[in-house]
Image (cartoon, rainbow, N blue to C red):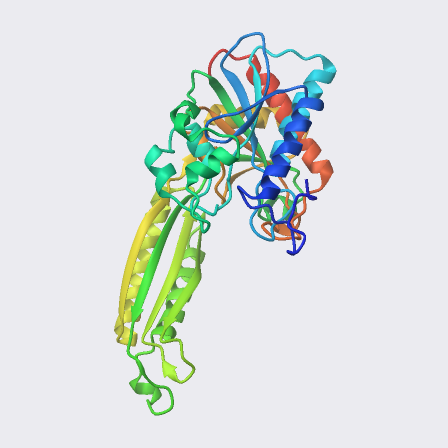
Amino acid sequence: MSDFTLPEESGYTRISFSLMDKQARKHIALLMEDEAKLTIRIDPAGNLIGRREGRNQEPAILVGSHIDTVRGGGRFDGIAGVIAGIEVGRRFEEEGIRTIHPLEVAVFLAEEPSPFGISTIGSRGMVGKLSPDLLSSLRDNEGRTLGMAIREMGGDPERITEAKRSSGDIFSFLEVHIEQGPLLSSRGIPIGVVTGIVGIVRGEIEVVGRNDHAGTTPMWDRKDALAAGAEVVLALEGVCKGLDGIVGTIGKIEISPNSLNVIPGTATLGMEIRSLQKSLLNQAISLFKDELDRIVKRRKVTINLKTKLSSKPVIFNSKMVGRIVRVCEKLNIPYLELPSGAGHDANHLAEITPTGMIFVPSKDGRSHCPEEWSEFENIGLGVEVLANTIIELDKEEAL
């Protein structure tokens, strides 16, 4: 899969809807057909789905992930989960295992941020979150609408409502994924059992000071918006360091007039905080506002804060988490229960069906970079846990 990348860029670049993405999907479709003997189709939202029939027609046990990357990303994010699903199908075929429930392996379209300004496009479509208005209003830099791009990937935007699935035809969803953080790697633990996916609050902070000459204005008479903004950055860091189970980042700063010899009059900062607990998100925002008030008084500037809940915390089905734990214990594989600090297609699937995630370690916690690496032995253990969890789930009539 690493061959499907833009050769002129460092790392691995396979942006959704690109030529490389299309070529990689064709390769995956061949793997599904030739290796795992899956019957493939593309749903109206552009998701590539391979199916292995069970004794019953429905509901299916769904597994999978994505194969698109960020620019200059790595070889394992998403791809590991897709290959894991195909390998389970291949193993079941090889060993003559006939499940009660059908098994479906999904390659979700455009999980990473796309040229259309949104991510997790395919999984949104699978839970009914892609409206015709959205398909016609979102455009990329080439002028294509999202609907046009989905059609290029084999989807059918005019039948987008038919992509919606429910608990009636999906029994459960499982996703193997690299951790993208350092907890498993640093502790030498090969499997992570994910308890949920963090919620994200994003916001914009506008610091308004006063433009002045950088050479003639005394230090005591300045209202430097950037200097105040630096305190804002440290304030958010301090708040989040003081609370367990939360992280906060300011990753974007714009200043005006952005000139070497002018004291900045305004600074606009982009922030986000993440936690599995909504109460912690609210607590962090409250403490951060208190810090901003202190900066305003000390710096004699104005600070305007706008925040929005970008995604709600997702708590995974406790019975599903328990099943994965019991499988790890049965196989004598060390595991750690932990939340996911990154978003996934599982965010959306959890709304319609019992969902679980299985993490494998990321070396040094690195991800979204060329150095992203997960040992094949650990990915193999992830496949074992996935396959055995599917077998256990297949015995159930309901979750």
